[in-house]
Image 1 (cartoon, one colour):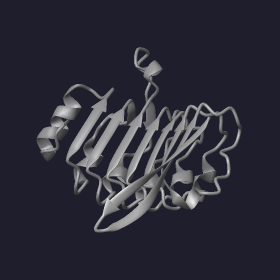
Image 2 (cartoon, rainbow, N blue to C red):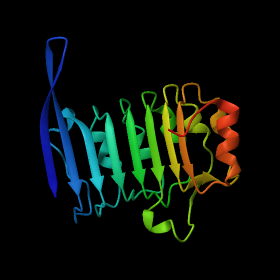
Image 3 (cartoon, one colour):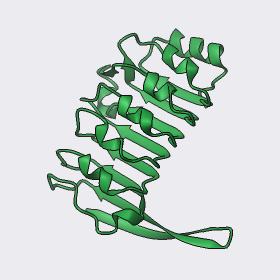
Image 4 (cartoon, helix red, strand yellow):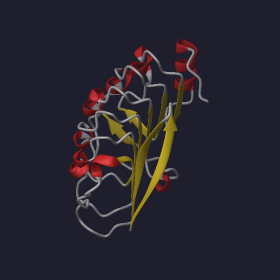
Length: 188
């Protein structure tokens, strides 16, 4: 199902159109071509059957992206979204390398999570490193629910220059506490 909304945004006497796309449980195998893609600033791709999200590059002005059931084995499809400020990926079981996110210099909030259905089983998504997230210059809020490096450590994030809050699950109980003490970052 494709839904969209056009919302006026005001600021300093200027008005801009903000278009929000909502792709929910679409049975198509490919992300549809969007004639208004240049105007879309927010996109939700929710449990669709797309084989890949590589066509996201058609959205050059995207600021917010929310995906449930990320189909690709890497996040390279997101690398072209240079203006992205908010990213939420729910259930990204095949992703290991977060390095392509490092180029998204405007990201302020990142939420990476496993499927809620994995909670009781203890399954996690193991990524190569959290360093690409630490290298994001404006990252302020980070959630890692069931997404962790093999070391099960948050230490790589200690160098994140602007990080204010971190919420993490499926890490050893003492690890988030150690991180909060070492950095002053909160879990709020």
